[in-house]
Image (cartoon, rainbow, N blue to C red; front, side, top):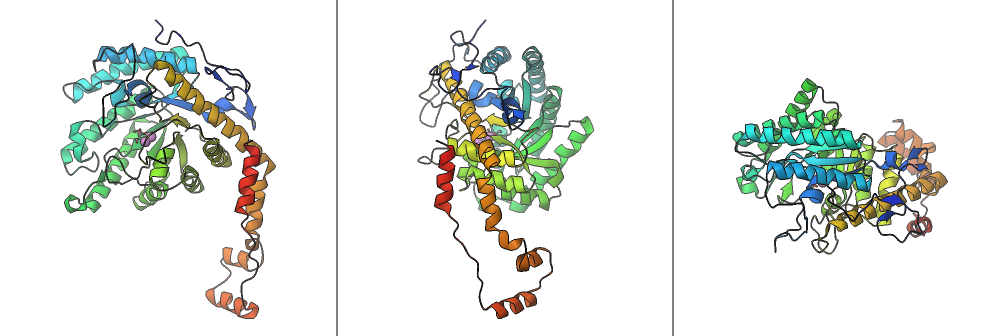
Length: 437
Ligand code: XLS
Ligand code: NI
Ligand code: NI
């Protein structure tokens, strides 16, 4: 049974192709900088938006046309959806996928039944993974949709809810391991607060850290070797999410002795919600050794909420790939399209157009960034800009050979600081444009 009967396998046809259902830039096996595009980019399709998204918004219900759906949140429907998902990913040529426990299998009457539902579906997923060779990039637990999580999960004021969340993550870790997941993601869901009048901030943060420590303990116990990732987000659904941005999460990990166990999964739209660029968040995580994976999407600057649109902006993808290549890649992480088609794009084929566009944009970004790095114009400029630190007083400061008294003596002799030169921002922007032509 084909759920996408009108779509054949998407193939690379080169930049001149006018076939909208082809890749013009993503050529999986082509080598860039010694590695294939497939290995560099490690694309993943996300289950929640792509196979569970209905297009609903606060003003109206979903209107996505998904002929295979029967309207039930049943185990049978979940099983059918596994076939739909793998047919889609196979035709697209996506090497990986990601899921939340609750978007692949429905909740049952109680935790025992819920776990059994998940096991049934996970078995089918494993079968499809074996059939197609598509792998699991990461799994994660949905600790935010069910009404029990109204006050949060690990940071709930209600200890019963913390206990349930622990049990849920335990199970999801087991399933992720069983499916060979290469990472496991913690996104804060409702871990945050809406009002400090009713919130014990210190206690909630301590509990969040405790939750992560328990996850680390359990991961060791079952021998799950996938990378743990925390996905920062500053707001939405709560007014203030605890995993605000890269800097905040890294400080939190340090404060609670968790640094060695976690890297970050950085999402474009979360970066912009935090008032940062994606490049800033990636660079900040990377210089701290914490860039693990990315959720590739984009927001709409005119709207300002987490619109999760597919990334098509070549400046954005080039900037992402500059940082990613700069640290030697993302593996075992990858580029997960945590993105959804617009409500107006309601036909099944739109799912293909969306992913093709995102994959092509990243392939172009990869090529452009690799060329820029090979030419080295930007890195040479930066190196020279900081040249005063490579000798003289700069080197003494960096090598801890200068006190404030030494600096005063040095400057009293010179009278004033010399040596400032232009930052040449406009020239550099023009250089970048040369590569994007
Ligand atoms: C929500 C997050 C979520 C995570 C996985 O804003 O992006 O989708 O990626 O829980
Ligand atoms: Ni995300
Ligand atoms: Ni998001």
